Length: 114
Length: 220
Image (cartoon, rainbow over all chains, first blue to last red; front, side):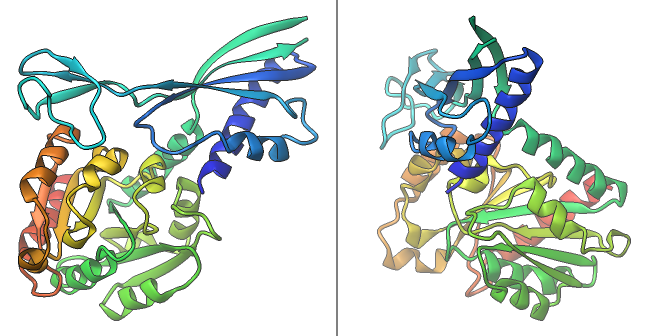
């Protein structure tokens, strides 16, 4: 259910940058979403098409780059992606890990016509 | 002509900026804010009912209750002794965000308050993404929900400073593997302070109360 406020934020940021670059139209939006940033599926394209009506970004295509979670084991330096059922290091079973990837929740870039 | 414009901006950056304003307002009045999050039925409101009477002599407390529609929780907080209880209806939204908290905060005279407890909407996904500006975020987990919750909702377990494990009086009746639960929690959040409690029997509640007092005093 938070797709709506998220889509609103993406639209605001997009329009602000489009204006700065004197865009006539926004055609594409590139999003980078880590698997642990939780939320947001492709349904935001649907929200987008409605929310962006009457703006220069109407019907722009949203592109999702998904980043898998990557954990770094502090004890044995093993780098791994956890499974749905286990989070501990698969090599040494340590729980001392650092999240190195998977938190991303950004707009990376937009494509505009000037 | 088409061209690509690099942006690299946090999608929810605007919420974070507003959350900082909420924090500044709390700090200006020396009020300590706690954001309580949990799934529906984990015991957020019961925890508030246990907490208020034990802190009533020491602090003046406001409760802001986020709910999709009703005011049941704010009424319970008022009955339990909150100096002021404000209901914020999210109008269908599954979480509080910094704007909604700001609106709730407008109804409170912060010169008459020492502690603000925010009861977020019951949900383990969305509230984790919307910071509010409180000083600490607390997750109320409960034993009957199952030991796999850290694995299913990593974002929530990573975004909090304290974890309450409620309904421990039910442990003998439920196949809850505490070791498995704790290992998941440790990976996600090594710094997390944990309080196993039972709002039904009162077990463990004092440790939670002492933590609040220590945090409030340290913030002064």
